[in-house]
Length: 316
Image (cartoon, rainbow, N blue to C red; front, top):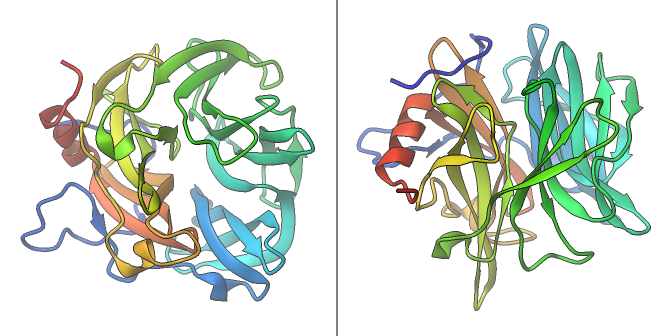
């Protein structure tokens, strides 16, 4: 059995797989867990990330406000399901990720600049005070996702270079830094291959360290006559050289199906941004944006997901 490497999260939210359900990822019956009603000034809240903190959980949340500006706020929860969001805006931008590295909490997000989208990076110890670091990419990129520890004494980040618009294409690359200030040494990781992801792919939650390699959930996009459809896939990256893809599922693990995923400001979107993993049980709770309108929750296990990837492996 595949095993997660890392901390135990005994209070990780969990719901058992429904009887007779055949797929490796299943939805929380109480979805969506965060809606626009969680903040009075929100048009929508989605594509957000959470992390264990103290006895509970903290998070960073994308809010499109009632002017349709894109901002990031923080929030807190005792159980990682019921959230209290703060009204204070910490940064402009969208699609945040958060991870702990050596006891500090690092935020990466799509930073808005006069010259296009960059990957902003900031660090906090208490989710109240933030130090903004140098942007990790310039001038244009999206989906910047840090690894949760140094690899060969370097910080590493998955990123998707893009153009200044709503990119109709995209591959995942990796970049490296010794100091979180100067970034480079880019390596190609992967691009679209199968029909369900043929338009573009982008990294999702912080990669999960396992004894099989880095488990990476990502989103893939297909363009149909009705526009984009975003689904969630998964791959396993080499533990020491994570630009090398060892295994990759040929089909999606979760795609828009429920009403809150198919109807909203942007229909047909499942966009994973965070994953909590309990190393003791291998349980994973995945947080994803639904239809660019709300935050939803899904579950799987390290063993079940890796088994699915290997059984449906496109890398021979």
